[in-house]
Image (cartoon, rainbow, N blue to C red; front, side, top):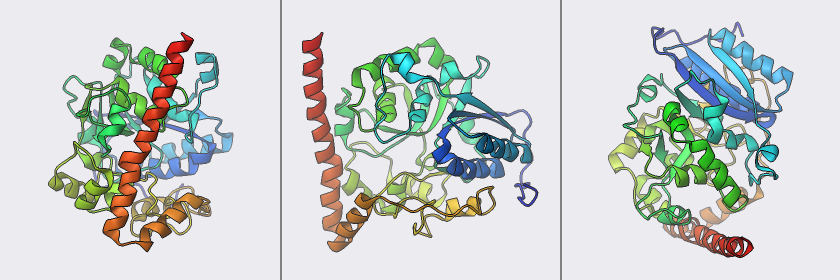
Amino acid sequence: MSDISPNLGCKMDKQGKLNALYATDEGFVEVLIVSLTSLFENSCRPIRVFVIEDGLSQKSINMLEDLATHYCQEIEFIKIPDYSSMFGRVIDAKRYALSAFSRLFVSSMLPPEITRVLYLDCDTIICEDLGDLWNTDLQGAVMGAVNDCRSYRYSTNLGLSRNDVYFNSGVLIIDLDLYRKEGIEERFAAAIFEFDGLLEFPDNDLICRELAGKIKELHPRYNLISVVRALSVSELLVFRNPDNYYSSDLVEEAKNNPAIVHYTSFFAFNGRPWNKGYDEFDGRFFSCYRAISLVRDVPLRVNWSNWGSRSRILFSAMPRAVSLRLFGFVHSVLKPTVQYFALKRYKKAFRNEF
């Protein structure tokens, strides 16, 4: 680690320790290392990192410990719960790792003296000190999150109103005292049992459903997702067709000065920045910190997603305005409509069974 130069451009605030939480398995640990490098490089305060891990090798654990030690930060590892034993069945996480569910049960996994935590997806890059985000006044909300810019149908499918915001769960600032006091984990456990295998974004959907009205909407610069970076504001509104979203000024402010860049999947890009052939300009945030990280010499991965490749070809073959409306229809109308009827059939069968 001696050849990595930490950021010494800010004075360390010894009083404002930040508690950060990640969840990962072995397949994502290289991405986590880059995210942590960006977090440590930009921090002006001590950080205590908790990593909920699902089968990490000792080599990976050692690398993460070395990284934290180099930056004089703390890191602790928590084994992922046995969800099959917890719920008496195998949980269907769709295309996501089971570790993604861990953010739902964070209050019982972390020590009781931890009263606030910042959850970060592994595919995030931190671009500045997060003191302002850490000190956000949640105004009585259980957590803070960024609007995910989705059609109202994604909310109404979950039994919410058209006006309820669908949030992205990749960056969450969580009030653990309130989380524990209101028994949020028990609500999530019941919802997982009810909706197991039916939700396209299981953990994200459940957060939006169970915490509706209890999430403070954060500035979009704290979770700048790929689709927002790829499209202009006007194109984004056509493609995602949200009822409730930020003003154009706020979105442009986020794009020009992001605090956290989140590399979510989006077909317009070739995979994600740890894949070969990813868009060089968009990947610059990731590449900058990867170049000084412990995985800088690890070869980039091959993106095997044929769906993304076919989608990019089809999108490029038509006039852009036509493509945006066609793909937007699929995303904002067709997909949630299919899910609506699947949920309706399931609920009918569920009522008949019980």
